[in-house]
Length: 140
Image (cartoon, rainbow, N blue to C red; front, side):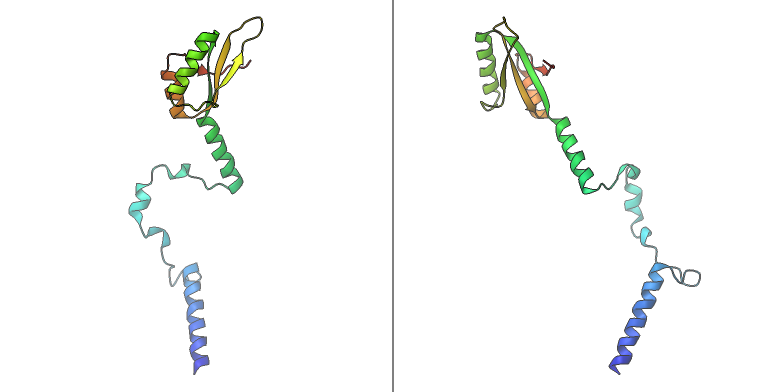
């Protein structure tokens, strides 16, 4: 009796599996999985723009987004006294002491440039609001 019950359960599972896969499609149409929540499908905005990325590609995309969000900003050239004042303005803006660099201008000049190599978007806005004239880094 128990064997018959197990065989009937296996047969029912097999028939259900075949029905959900569409094996009996002309006589018994398969269930419509895609139409369970049509309001969600209709509410999607540009679903063709969504792509599932492999883990390596997702990591590369995340690093590219972080690099784009962080920019290098610099100001100068400053004389020695003006550079001290600009550094005081950076400290007053909330930058920790080691987050900017002093780059000397080519000799014989004694002027220096102040550079913040990795500034996020919020920090970029604060630096550009200072009167020290921060702008994008130039290649030197």
